[in-house]
Structure formats: structure tokens, C-alpha cells
Image (cartoon, rainbow, N blue to C red):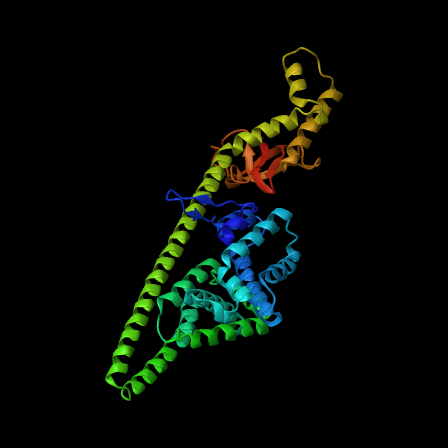
Length: 409
């Protein structure tokens, strides 16, 4: 049984069987994003995991320890977040399922890895975190192209295996905002020595395997020089061997293209799932927004009619319909509590006792603009004498009704 399938039986997120009987592992990145969306910035957390994975792998190679030590190292560094058990378990499963290349490197050793693509994946991932560990410029303009340009200087050509993996990883962490870029620099520089160690190990292994263009050219030039010194038989054997090697390279390239296609397809499905989730959230917010006025009115009714404030609406109804007579004390209590409920909604009346029934001069243009009035002003006069009767009202300190005056003359 596949190592992952065997372990997956005890995981909290289960895979599924496809129509053709193959096993399809779950999209842990999507599960993790949904679980942590209300906890922290997921792209930042994703980058932190990349840094810790590279640093942990470096530590394991130095100490000759296994992948379980890398898991332990990462979990220790995440204690600061105080995640609950479920989140910790999900993170552990994500690290295990998404780090097959580093698992092979740590458990089996670099030289024992047969497939070049695992060396390329680990190399690109260590290259990215190393870029941020050594980058001193905080400018984020065109950061994707700057990173790609740096990799191009190492690879010598835009090898689809290297740049396919690079594009995938950059999309996952998205360092384009200035805040994220600075945070990534700080996180990576904290493990600069460990990152440099694992990067150099992978760089040397990539060179040894002829995965970098200038190394491949050197090997090919050396072969060309030796061909001239060999006899016809040896030349034929070399030709046969070369054809076999080219065939193997072609097979592996096709395999890598298929892998990249699967990776991009996986990203497309993930983005579709995220988009669907966002649409559901948008619809829920719109529905809440539509129901908000009704909810506010229901809450206002419940507050006005709550025993805490003396069942105001019930009592007003009784008195208004003549079932009982309200004395002055009862009426004062009802009105006071009514205003108290309105204040819970930040609806406040403003009128000093000295202002009430006082006479003031009001300009014609102020009526309707800063004063409410008992009647429209049609006179040619520019100034009027008015009596202040009712307060100014505010909602959240914003005026919603001006003071009410009665025009006298």
C-alpha cells in the first residue's frame, strides 16, 4: 500500500477513490485555508511553513534525523499561534502530504533520489525562501519578474520544470504587497544560515545531475572532445547510449509536463473552490444586509417592550386605548424609559432646559436648513421671531433632525 494511503486512514481529512479506481488525495491547502481564514493571513502563514520546512530539512540533514524531526521542529515553532488540537493535526497532515520531496531528501538522502523533479521542487522552494532571506530591497514592484530573473541567472534558460514549480509556489505565497514582502524578508532572514545550507546542498546536487544549463553544456562539450579520439565501434556505442539517454530524458520531460499539468489543474480546481466559497459568503452577506432593517426593528421592539424598561409598548397600548388611566408619574416613567431605549441605539435628543420655550431670532434661510418649523415661510421678511419647542436629534452623533421652532412673528 502507498505510504500516504496507509497514513491517511488516521487523518482528519480523507481522500477519495476516483472512477478509474485510483486514489486521489485531498486538497489539504484548501482545507487549511478554510480552517484558518478567520485566524490569520493564509499566504503569510503558507510562506512561514515554507521557511520552517526548509530550515527543518536543513536541521535534519545536519543531525542525520528523519522527517518526524522536521514535523516536530515546525510544530514547536507554531506554538505561538495557540492553535487548537484540530488545527494542529490538520497542519501536520498538510506538511506531511505536501512535502514528499523533502521527505525523500531527509529520509533517503539526496544522492538516493531517483527522480530529478523532486530535486527541482526542493531546489526551487529553497531558492524562493533564500531570495527573501538575502533580499535587502523592500521594493515590491515587479517582484515576480525579479525572482524569476534571479532563477534564470542560475538555470541559464527558462526550463519549464524549474519555472513551472516557481510559478506555482509564487502564486501560493503572493508576496506582491509591501507589508507581505517585508514580513517575508523578516521570517526568512531569521533562518538565513539553515536556508543557505539546504540551498547549497540542493544546488550542488542539481549541478551534479546536470540539471543546470551551464553544467549540461560542460558535460556535452567534454563528450564532444572525447568523441574525436574514439574508434568507430566506440562511436556507435556512444551514439546508442546517447539515444538511450535522450529517450530517458524525453520520457522524464513528458512525465514532468504531465505533473505540471496536474499541478495547474489542481490550482484551477482550488481557485474554483475558493471562488465558490467567496460567492457563498457574498450571498450570505447580501442576505444579512437585506434582513438587517427587519432585524433592527425587531430588536428595537423587543427592547422597548422588555421588562427591564417596564414593557413600554404594552403599557402605552393599554393607556392609549383607555383600558386604564395614566397619572403624571406613570407617564413620566414611560417617557423616560422610552428615551433610554433610544439611547441604546445612539439616538439622542438635545435641548437644554433654558432653551425650551425661549424666543430666538431666526433668519429665513435657516428655516429648513438648521431649524424645523411649524409652517413654511412665505413672507418677504428675512428675519423672524420663533419659539424653541422641540430638541435636535442625533444618531451616532450625526444630526438626523434639527431643533423645532414655532414662528411667532
